[in-house]
Amino acid sequence: MGINYAPESIGIAPYTTLLASGLAARGHDVRVLTGFPHYPEWIRREGRFRLRSEEFANHVRIGRFGHYVPRRATAFGRAVMETTFGLQVLLARWNDPEVVLFVSPPLLAAGMSALRARLSRSRPAVGVIVHDIYSRGVAETAAIEGRSALAVQALEAAVVRLADEVVVIHEGFTEILEHLGIERGRIRTIRNWNHVAPPDPAASAVFRVESGWDPDEVVVLHSGNMGAKQGLENVLAAARLASLQRLRVRFVLLGDGNQRARLESEGAGIDTLQFLDPVGDEVFPSVLGAADVLLVNERPGVAQMAVPSKLTSYLNSGKPVLAATDEDSFAATEVAASGAGVRVPADRPDLLLREAVRLGTDSVLAARLAESGRRYCAGTLSEHEALDRYEEWILDLVRAPHGLGAR
Image (cartoon, rainbow, N blue to C red):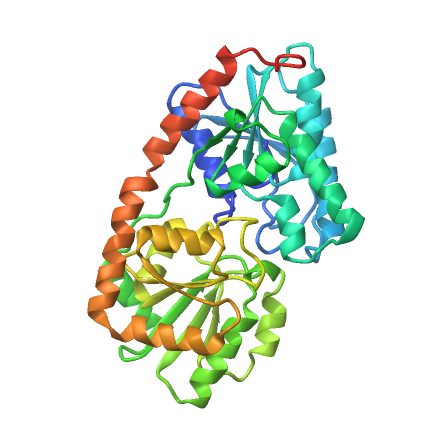
């Protein structure tokens, strides 16, 4: 159960999709309960509301449920979206599965469904896969404060406690969940993996020409969601500096999100700034290969609520990574562990510009960092290894005592 699934191509959706299809390819009977595509645009792609639909793709049965999609991704809007999705899943027929996996986010829907699983007569094994830490998210983005923030923390703790075991996508999440009252022995780390093919140099060269990117300018690319936690005002400020200093640098923001319209308005007239619409999976590797530097940018204070999913594709691209993020962030930890790039503080556009120029003009340094990223990706972010570990986890869930009173 997860609200995001293909054809959504960024964020959590690719991992839920590939996990489901990968398990089905290994002979497991997999059914997915998900929503209709809406992310990162926060608009129903079909344009009209449908209550339910059934599909079959890559040996996976997919049930889609209509839910509210907020125009703005506020805390209240997200809560309504998750609740309307969760109610649909709660009332759907599950057909007595042996194991149910809940992807968080959406936290509210995962909690509602996990409670149903716990109270059902068939007593399936319950696993929760944590991609984002809600309680850290509301604190780091200041979306909710005071007693409401404490309530979110209590809810998150209650949801993960309903699981027999929890999977986290980064080792750093383990300590956070322990503070929420989850025993370390019930937590496993299974890393997200690279799911994007390496760029084809010829296709990347064509894309660069067609995009109007000059051979002698440094192209700094940020891909993916344009939301509050990305803090892309920092990139706009760096682009303004580049324009004032007449540097041959182009900052490119590729993707969509609830902040894009505002960013485009604020960035109007900056000749070193460019917005690109999302591209298909078949084109995306070429875009990465056409850039000189790949950028991860996070709002100051955003550190341990999530691990930017774009990093898995960046590290296999053959390009250096520049991370504008807090020193203690999981993004900074990943860039340092991979050796694929450098970090600058989250709120220093001058340093962002300086390092972008350095990475984009020092070919020896760029090649060294890029090669480190590829080695890290091959050794740590393997899809086959991740699927092996997920399959092992699921089989362990089924074999072990589970249900109310099992622990």
